[in-house]
Length: 308
Image (tube, rainbow, N blue to C red):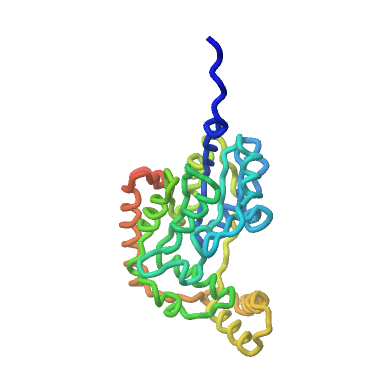
């Protein structure tokens, strides 16, 4: 029998297989920068092990992500080309601003953490033509998270008090399980992996095994203890900038931190009392149990201590 005639060009065209990605989305203020720093330092070693890592230093630079809010702009061709060049590798992408930022309206609204996270992730998945992604997210006790996120805003010169920062939030009702469910429902997301900031960095061997595969982990660099900004330093910086708005905010805050370093004498802001923090921790533990029971979610837990 003779060979079949060639199919029409329209039938020969095959659908390009979608990308498979491991996407680390943060969250902010959960040691994300330290983890990203470790990945960046280990980039060469990981590449030899078949892992290609793309972090903020690339995704905010020469390989920019697509715009995740507002009107879409040009496709992320540079990033897609880089993925193609590394198509034989496991592709790992890390950028906490996929979720949003620590700006009040983006970090939480009502009872929702990162209210725009799902549409932002959806736009990213569509732009990258990714149909198979595992999402990695770290969580933290909500009131401690809000305190740290608010501090980051203050360090940038946005000195609104906590009451104003949380005016459109319901801090007692915030649940990470809601965010995990919304991320897991994004088309193309097959699984969400969650761990607690409070377990970092001890949890990283489990994280690396899940994200990278067995034998592909690496040693993290020494974790420098980040000392926050004292309340007195923030008051000083605010006064300086009010007197001279032309001053560089970063420089003023740096000078204030040097003058009034955080210490027992100059404590950091403490917007929530001990009773509120204790109640928040109890809700957080319940929420972690809730997350652990969600379908298509892997909750990384440290091994129990003997006799515990």
